[in-house]
Amino acid sequence: MKEYFVNVPVIKYEGKDSKNPFAFKYYNPDELVGGKTMKEHLRFTMSYWHTLTANGTDPFGVGTYEKPWDGETDPIKLARMRLEGAFEFMNKLGIDYFAFHDRDIAPEGKDLAETNAILDEIVAYAKELMAKHNKKLLWGTANMFSNPRFVHGAATTCNADVYAYAAAQVKKALEITNELGGENYVFWGGREGYETLLNTNLKLEQDNLARLFHMAVDYAKKIGFTGQFLIEPKPKEPTKHQYDFDVAAVLAFLRKYNLDNYFKVNIEANHATLAGHTFQHEVAMARINGALGSLDINQGDPNLGWDTDQFPTNIYDAALIMYEVLKNGGIAPGGLNFDAKVRRASFEAEDLFLGYIAGMDTLAKGLKVAYKMFEEGEFEKVVEDRYRSFSEGIGKDIIEGKVDFEALERYALNNSTIKNKSGRQELLEAKLNQYIFNE
Ligand code: XLS
Ligand code: CA
Ligand code: CA
Image (cartoon, rainbow, N blue to C red):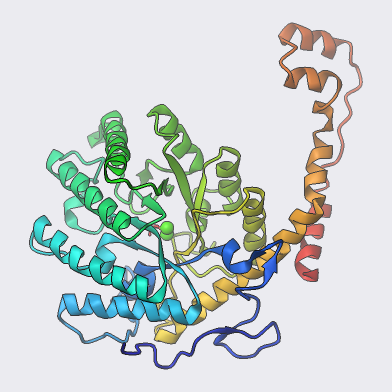
């Protein structure tokens, strides 16, 4: 097969003192961390859209990225070249998984029938290349936000014809995800929200969204798709109010519509910060609710404040996220998907590899720091001690449901000395630094 990224070698682990930009300094795929290899812990995944399809366009200017297939005008040939490039890209980085939207891998035709036929042709080729290169699909999804038909939404549109189209598109996306052995299926509702309540039936839109999810669950059963369904929260962008605002909003929605047994969440770092949360908050919220599905690992820029989808280089986030993942017992069948793009000015094809290397090294280091924190249990012990009052006396009675308002009032009236203890945040943050510096 033709080589596309000719200036980039196979990326190997060279250790922390390496000066080679095309080498891993911390990600050593076969290194054991607590009985599992780094590769097994991290389940790194290539995002098809940012890596193969994006061109660096921003609201003020056209694309800048240079790609080996530039100049190819036949859309089918272009799709096939990108697919070949995708496998070379994964091979060179040692990434086993990819994730894609239906419209990333194949162009649309003149109508739905032709679009589906083109998709089938490309999916068949993807299946062949997956077998040849031993690659797996972490998740598939339907892009129901780029085409102008979704101007009023997809599952939350005011137009029933568009709703039917969206349903047909999800049906097909589920079929191809199943065909490629996808381990998950993601819903990100780019246009599922609203701009003004002056023209919006809030209840009908959310009821219809739930109807589409139920149809997806039913259809998955019908075709034997056993992958995990995921919803990806995001509070805004492109709509002002998106229904899947954050993990808490998604959980409330799932419970209201009896969907909580079928769905977990795919959490993206940059979406968490847009919702005013830390990434760790969102992951912890999902974990304690048994709903942690998968992670889109990137980071935003606090000075910009929009979804910049940058490669993750923040070691604090990496360590704290991997700490949550370890507490969760791992992330499988989800993974760590680089929903990240290089900056518009980093337009050479090599920059993409450098972005992945930076991200993979950061997460690998984060994993090692987190494993030490997890194994030594220092922070867990602090938390346990902090709540000790609930494991004895009146606290225990509260937990065991043995007391009511009257009993607690009696207790409070007879207890004239309430004493609190310091939360020691500064000490704990210094301890976290110590784990990071020493690992
Ligand atoms: C956009 C989302 C999107 C989803 C998949 O902000 O991150 O890329 O991950 O549709
Ligand atoms: Ca994402
Ligand atoms: Ca994003």
